[in-house]
Image (spheres, rainbow, N blue to C red):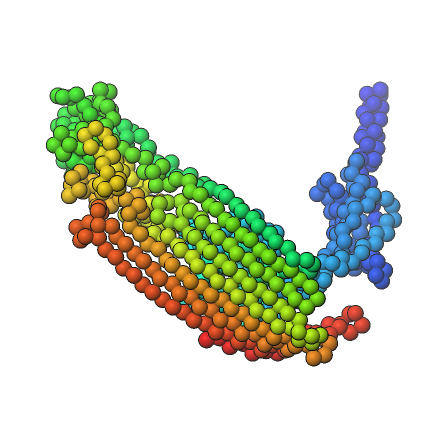
Length: 586
């Protein structure tokens, strides 16, 4: 009887403990403007995952765990609040007018965030400044929901591939439309001419309602780029300088890096082939492999990089490397010395990134001006790659009188892009792709040609690269003979020289309150020259005395817009926004 009573008392105490461990809280959430219930407000217990949502009458019912009695109440367009939990709560939320009145750049104008009904993502200057990019489209990576950003190479200044809400077409174009300060750009527009430091915001319009005004051109989404202008106040001069280093962050694949380990695997493959396919006895197979493994036939590598004592074999009958072998082989016949190089370390080295920007801006009641100058030198991950840009921008808006405003926005950029061929993922199978060869090249092959003393041979101050061919006085490499991407990147040159001028002029008239009549003209001139040089010293073009090519393109675009926009609000509740316009581009 005593044990039963003890167990009964313990059960009562546990039940009482469970009752006191949680607190049931009820309440209502209303608006401070009219006292009406706020439907769909989120009520959350701070420090837990417990939450609830207000019903059609603004009521909520939530259970607070023991020791947690602070509630967080939030609703879109209203200021969130934290209060202590109590019975029969009445919580009043204030409108966040600052958030609702925030201006969003939309097609052919702007809109208040509170009245905008489309889907848009915005990246402002403060976030953009944290991204060290040479080309603005790359800054959107991971910054806007529903936007996929891909890059096929690490070439500085190259344009990213952007997909807004997935792929919109199978056969037609998939790229979004870029609109800079209200002017639609052509599909082949070079965004690398825009200095990211000059950008105030980037807005991505994602749904059909937001992009409809641009018609079929906006079917894949629209990216609106707005450049900076002066803030009100006295003239301000800013200067900033940035220095950094570019290096390869993605590590290489886990490949064979030991010459000994690689050769022992190669021996095993050749030995198994000799015994299985050729029918050799173990001893004959062993002798056959030792004879052929350093040749460029029968599965051999074509190179000998180990020195073995006279009369001894490179491999023992157990398939292991001769313990008396030493790395580094002196070939008396060619007076050359062969030793492996680390191709990955030789081709991928840290480079300097430096950027300088200066601006002068000022604004008063009648004039707003912004002047900027910038210089960027962004070194690439591999030799022969990089991007340099010098940019200038002049932006001015002048208020002629109370009903007329005029303005101009002129930008010029000169850039030089060192862009070696065959370095993208689309050229992964090319013998000139440094990223692929760094993975594929066996750890027994030298990158440089060395003399009998083991020193790299220089020809007129130029290091001589081993292209794996006997024609260069070395040996015939069984893998990708007559190729060496390191030598090609060092001595072959591919560069793009670009002069790009963008001009934008407008007149804005407001004859009556709420009505804006705006005429805008824009011009784009792009001069691009491509220079190519294949060196005459070594490699595939050496026998031809080298090669050279030059291409020049000039594109011109002109856009004119005439937009009428009327905006009016009735009784602080009803909004009318009417836009009528013409946009022509050639």
